[in-house]
Structure formats: structure tokens, C-alpha cells
Amino acid sequence: MNRLILGLCLIFSLNLYADLVAQGSAEYKNGNYKESIKLWTQSCNSGNIDGCYNLAYMYANGRGTRYNELKAVELYTITCDAGDSAGCSNLGNLYENGVGKVRQDFFKSSRLYAKSCNAGNIEGCYNLGVAYEKGRGVNRSYKIASELYADTCEKGLVAGCFYLAELYRDADDLPGSQDKAKRLYKRACNMGSSTACSRYRRLVDEGKK
Image (cartoon, rainbow, N blue to C red; front, side, top):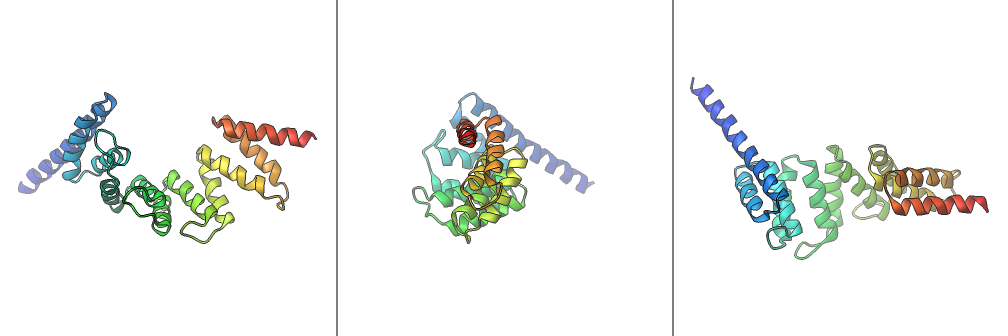
């Protein structure tokens, strides 16, 4: 009987903290950022990862509070350690950019992107692709970058399609690369990238010469 009571109390507590996240989201949509921070802080302090993630976003973007990159790192670290793939990717962004008091660290950012990607986060995979293309925290590999971009492109990420097209466009020694670039630019264009549209038209015009 005691076990049943404890179980019901636990369920009630989890629902309560989830409700705080939902209430905070409603306040956020209404522009009441300070109230949303208050609610998400309560939720996060009670162990709700969604509350911590939302709170991290507020500190990382200065919404309803002063911009605090260190607090954002602290909160995203909590969510990442708890297995939240988006939290890992966003934490990687903070280390990659090295804004304010957060020291730029490509080694950390690439590891965080890999962790996020391995957990199935499309943004994490894209960011990891950029790391391999630029050689940031990992050995530069256009092959791995292209594989990651291709995967994110197939999953509907316009940036993955666009930058895969860029790799093919610059690969003059790769047979059929310009045709592949053209198809990818067109795909990214259809997904809403105006830059991809202009690149596609340019390749089409070049092909007519």
C-alpha cells in the first residue's frame, strides 16, 4: 500500500513539473518572459530537463533576463548529461563560438556534436558535418562531412542540402560533381533557400555556354 501511495505521489510530482513547463511556454508565447523564466526555474530545480532546456535558451539569448552564457552552459550541460540531444548540440554551439566568458573550444564542441548526432539529433549531425568540413576539433574530412550533410539533407534540413551542393560545386576533379551540385541546389531552393536558387540558376546558365 505504501508503495502505491509513493508511486502516485511521484506521478503527481512529475505531472506538476511538466505543467510548470507548459505554463512557462504559454507565458513565453504571450511575451511574458520573466514569468516563463520563473516557472521554468521551478521546474528545472525540481529535476525537469525540459524546464532546464528552456531556461538555458533564455539565458543564451537574453530573453527576459540578462544574457548569461555561463548559466546557459551550466543548464545545457545538465540537459546534455541527462541525454537530451538538442541540449548537447546547443552546448556545442556555445563552445564553438566562444562568446563572452565561454572559452572557444573546438575539441569540446565537436565531441558534443558527435554525442548529439549519435542520439539522432539532425542539427547535431549538421554541426558535426561543418566541424569535419572545416577541421574544427577533428581531422578535416570532406568525405565524412559529405556523408553527414547527405544524411541531414535526406531528413529535410535545407542547410544540409545546400552545403552538400557547395562541396560538390567545389570538387572540380570529381566526375559529375557539377550535376550533383545543381540537383542539390535545386532541392535546397525548393525547400526555401533563396541563395540556393541563385546558385542553381548560375550553374544552369554556365551549362548553356
